[in-house]
Image (tube, rainbow, N blue to C red; front, side, top):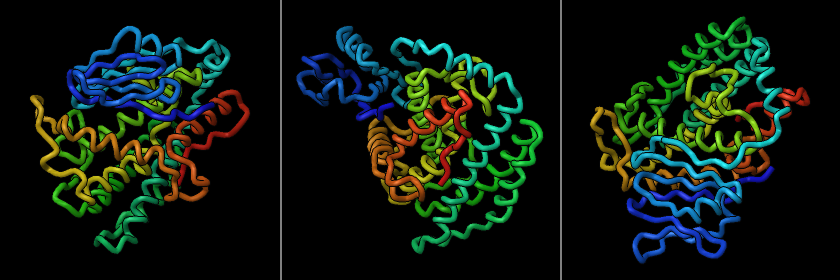
Amino acid sequence: MTEAVKNIYVTTQGATVRKETGTIVVAFGDEILVQTPIKEMGMLVLFGNIQVTTQALTALLQENIDVAFLTQNGHFKGKVVTAKTKNCFLRRDQHHNFANPAFALELAKKTVKAKHANGIQLLSDYSRNSNNNFRFENRGDLEVLLLSMDSAINMEQLLGYEGMAAKLYFEDYGKCFTGELKFIKREYFPSPDPVNALLSFGYSFIAREVQAILECEGLDPYIGFYHQLTYGRASLSLDLIEPFRHGFIDRLVLKLVNKKMLGVEDFETGENGGVYLKKSSITIFIKAYEEACNRQNNIYKNIDEVSFRKIFWQMVANLKSVLKQEETYKPWEA
């Protein structure tokens, strides 16, 4: 198992990606924007009108590097991926366990509990921050719901507990914002305000990255355990990112907003009435996301100064062992 070294994000409209003697070059006209050795790359992510030469695409696939295509506003459209793994036995184990409702429910419980434990940790941290007046009013109720999740006898009951916990969490999360950008409640498809737009953007980023890791490690990203089968949805990717929603993306969004790294002027309203990051501001988010992914973590306990990007790989490795009945499932928890 290896950790992706450097993801390359191309947002300059009209740019071209080409291969030059063992490197990938991103150019706009005569200007070279990026030049990186192929062997040091993790993934190539293209936003909007970006051209890729056949030679570059072939070289990337030969090095098992996926190429992701997004709209200018960051909506995932698809990927060019390397050949699927030959590990048919691992996928057999995944499909076998998917057909076991007790197995799926147990993984789902652990996933949801880790997600909300990380949310409680985030809100607890902010309640101790002297730079704001936030008070963690829903902590007691959230902790009761966290304990109740263990008693869920089926997926429907677990989803009920999760929905109540999400409502309480986002009520208090909205009170953490100190600047001009406010958050009232979680809404999407489309996002009605800048904070919801950032949350959705961040969740899609991490889901895309985890999906690539799953494919690299030989798992089927469309067969999940908590998120059930839905045509075209990478349900297993969504399963694995649940613990990182509150503990990683929500924390990142708070930083971007409260430190005024992004403001009202960085967003625009689309034709469908949804709010999106402006094309010129997407790079601000990308820079912050990459720094957060690669920085040696010193926020959470029991992680031994490991980067979040390394933790993504560790979670997939743990799941593989679980499916082979070699380990117990341990979703990341703060």
